[in-house]
Length: 191
Image (cartoon, rainbow, N blue to C red; front, side):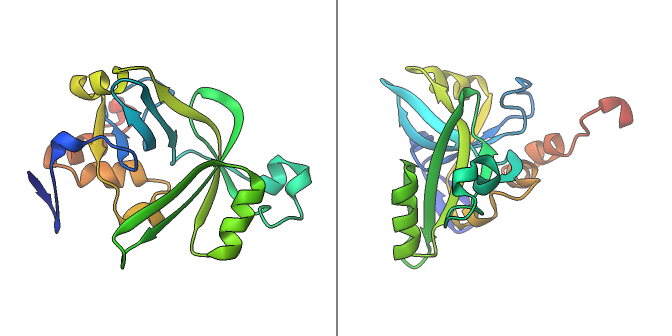
């Protein structure tokens, strides 16, 4: 059992759907370097799926799809969700309820469902992702065991997950060693 702030959790239970994966600084694959992945499904037998939440494409759905430019979803930001099916648009809605201590997630919903969710509760955050991140049977667990990923429990900070330096911010909070690694310059010759 490890204590992070006021939260107690058993690290052996990580990762699980709804947790975050932080790319370890040694992970140099350009598809995942400095990425933060919201894990939406995870099973040792069936594989894992998630979306990268810190790669904004600097456009919204109205700009991406002219059919949506005057609709309720026009201002929903679009992100690069990962290297798998990178032209597939995935809509995701989530809400952290601190009073309930829960995180509610709707993944892969259509535009009509997204509009219904927002109409029922405007507290939901809605994001669009092009593509997703996926791992086959046992692959993610093996990558975590090798040290490629730092799984962390999701917290109310989900609301700030979209900030530019969220990878560095979240990784720095995990340990002094990771804080040093997270602060290394991209080009070590500048050090």
